[in-house]
Image (cartoon, rainbow, N blue to C red; front, side):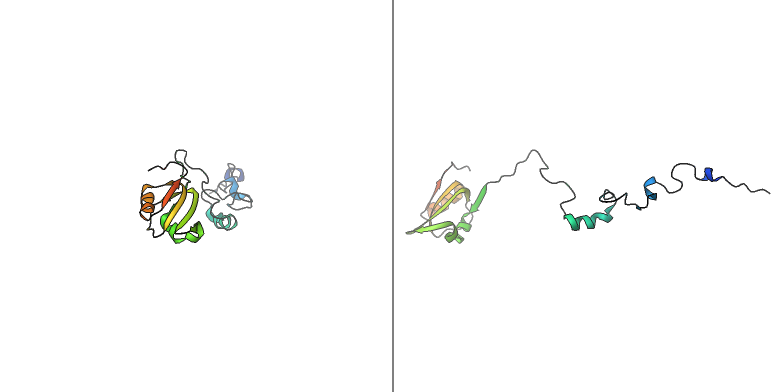
Length: 146
């Protein structure tokens, strides 16, 4: 009985010669090459190196992600912060404290014990009423909105 031996050319028929994808037999393993190549979808084995070198901001989207919404960037300060840090924000003139916060909007959270004269860009209605009850006033450089 004769055994039939297949030719080598038929065994290695096709381009990959038994190594699967061509990139798997290029001496670099599954990395795909040198440098940052191979750090894509499924190759998370380089992720720890990248986060160590570049931090967590390397992956994902940065910057403006939505067109429709704008973030309100006005400076705001509460009455309780002003009251706590009067020596930082204001100057004592007789019985009153003069506070100059021209770029701020004054919000009404907190209680007031001192007479404050505040110069501000804007103020909420609750802040205006609390300051008036304490015997002070808020001078606005711009008309206040509700």
